[in-house]
Image (tube, rainbow, N blue to C red; front, side):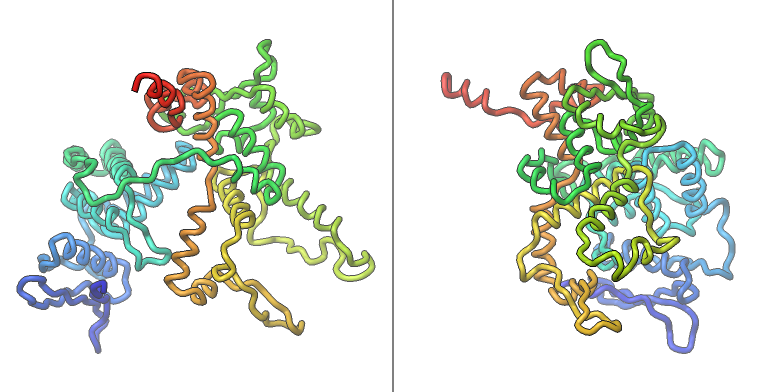
Length: 459
């Protein structure tokens, strides 16, 4: 049975927050005052005290000085202010969306535990405590924060360290702060509690074909292009006619995207489109401005509405007129081009449709409140989770993991096929790697059939 976490609470008759911790050896109990109850500073101190207590084997930590709204201002810029300034700079530098998303996750965790701490007072000891929190995770959060894998923890520490490097370059903090953080050693394989990530494997083609009826023609085109070119999904989502170099004597179209994963490192990326990929693109080139995106969610939604109207059985003189029940300003509107995230979600939704869970785990319909009798609606995810209970909900999550795949697996599938048929160098160039070592170790699965043939003869 898991041990109960000490609660954040207020003392009766006071407006001050406190937490009571117990020493695991002496069994001594001590109250720690955190500051004004409900303030962000008191909650930050509460989480920090718990992590220091856990990291020290549940021995009582030294009482910290709570910083309240009416307390003394910290010396120099705080970590929250530094992270906010770096975030504004990173967005102006037009980092790729994936890098910004990871930076946002790491920055949020840093601000949560040390937001009011002076940036000049942050050192390797605090960074190690934060790293242990990354490894441990927190399932009590909403949504639960799962423990991070070792390579991801190391990468997030490097990102946070780059925040302090930038701040030192802007003369916001002393350079010694960054120099001390550089002394931290990364987590080593087999020498840490952090788990290793599962390797990304090529997606089976039968799983790809199974979702075809449940995706738009735009998403299906992106899937085919990834299989034909080995490009990343984000590199193809923003494709426009003006980006294509079709004047090539070799009969191969090329594209040199300005924004890609390694653009900020000065790397160049070229995507090659052969005859099969060209056949996928050509229908989207017709009557399209040269600067318009080829694959548009807005067009996909319009086509879906047209197909839905064509299947309508109610006469046009009865029921709702076309467009009469649409909002002028919807909360969510389809964009002019897919992003890596929206493209991945479209595949995820299609996998759920193509591979529905067993009836005992499936989402159910419940009576809807309204004027119509016997009206039904789908239960919300919260209702669904409450009805299944923890055990069945874990079974549903396991089912989804086994029956879902993501766009990056298409890149691995393309890399494996190119390497098997044309060799490692061709796979390296197609995937855009500066070193064949990455292609060999990560992206292209080894073809073991040749080894089997050799061993049959000499083994």
